[in-house]
Amino acid sequence: MDSCTLTSLARAARLGVSTVSYALRDSPKIPPVTRDRVKRLADQMGYRPHPTVAALMAHVKAGRQPIAPTKIAFVWTEQNPASLNTPFNRQSIAGARRRAQERGYQLDEFRLFERGMTSTRLSQMLRARGITGVVFSGCESSTSFHLEMNWAWHSAAIIGNARCTPELHRAGHHHFLGMRRIMSELDERGYRRPVAVLESVVNERASRTHEAAFLAYHPAPSRARAALIQVLQVEPAVLRPWLKKQRPDVIIVSKHGMIAPIRKLLGAAGATMSFVVISIEESLGTASGVDPGHEMVAANAVDLVIGQMLRNETGIPEHPKELLFAGHWVEGSTLRPQPRGAAVVMG
Image 1 (spheres, rainbow, N blue to C red):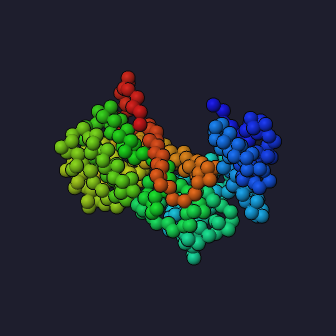
Image 2: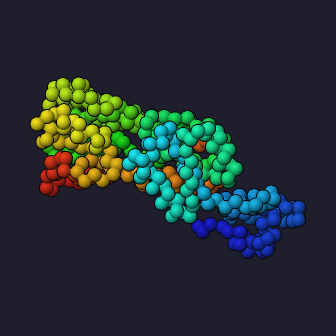
Image 3: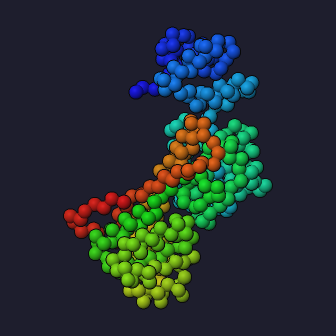
């Protein structure tokens, strides 16, 4: 059934559009009998006022200048300004800005790490500027963060998987499916002794789903736990003896930058060792692994915010939504080729 408009409602009621509009707003200009009749007919026909138009009219009626909902705040949650230039953050802001422009909005950046800035002060600043929608950046340096905003003023969403207090809507990478895709690719290519060198912060931020999928899909379940190690960084004194004991035929790493130092500590064997990267954050031309699609994830966080704005939804959601995306496989040169005729594995 087509949605009922104010015009079609007026036609059915055999009244003018302005009369129906006044009746729905309980205007004393319209007799009570007429108001009741229009409201009953509106219920029968399924009429619903457009939330954006309703909000704008309320704003005008209150005697304020109309504020068009054309701006969305992009808030950097990291405390280190240098972190804004990482591949993850570069792709996130690019994806968010592109989607905002496609939807007719302007994206304004704000930084929580600036001197004197707090989330409470930021909330007041955004309120003063008439900015309702807020997209919070991902957080690479920690696994969680806390925000104190006047949530009744804002429609918000988070990029990534770091946990936020309070819980808000979010868009992120489905880390479990990403690792499952990796384990399936390794199985198809004949690898039987995979090991995983995981950055502990990354694994924790992903709610240990990298670890869970590796253990669940390892070809030798009895050896799986011993074949996984978590590190803060590549530490030769720890990794060299561990790798010697494990005798892997392929090494899964959290990011591309871990490959070179691990090759170095392996010596001559490092030149021929196979590697796969859990999160390929930008095209480096060599590594095999999963591209989480950070631009696409950030774009969907913007969509979450815009959807709330159009529905006039503000505040902390009772049931926060999580949009998780599996990313896509990147075929590089750090693994042996998949055998011909192998089935395409959906991630």
